[in-house]
Length: 190
Image (cartoon, rainbow, N blue to C red; front, side):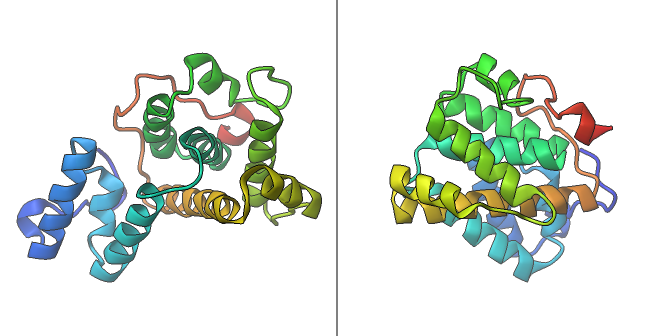
């Protein structure tokens, strides 16, 4: 667990942060370094925790599409920590190893159906700088998912961009959540 600033140790944490750590440990088995770095600012940690809770509880988006969006966003941004934990979550959501590996270059992959490919296109469009989202893509996804799930999908992609860029700023790397290889496209990773 390495970061450019020291994670907030449990012994130095307030009661609120220790409770937060306990909840995260119960869910993930440990408290990842990015969350311990975030804990240096209680307001940011609170916002982070609330958004994480909202994005994991009572979702309307299928776990498969949420996992595809999370992991591909992490790959495009090049966040080694997010790819590590995202691979573990994607596996739990039912994605096969072949699908995980295909996410490195998903455009021509036959493992993904038309809706999957539209999800991945939205990821690429939203993650690009500047973002360039075609209205026809949004319309296709609305037809496939409905408004409520489409809003959730966009939030998932935006949130993963936040997490990945935050983790880059503090040098967070993989922590062994997944046994998968680190799947960051070379063009982005180099």
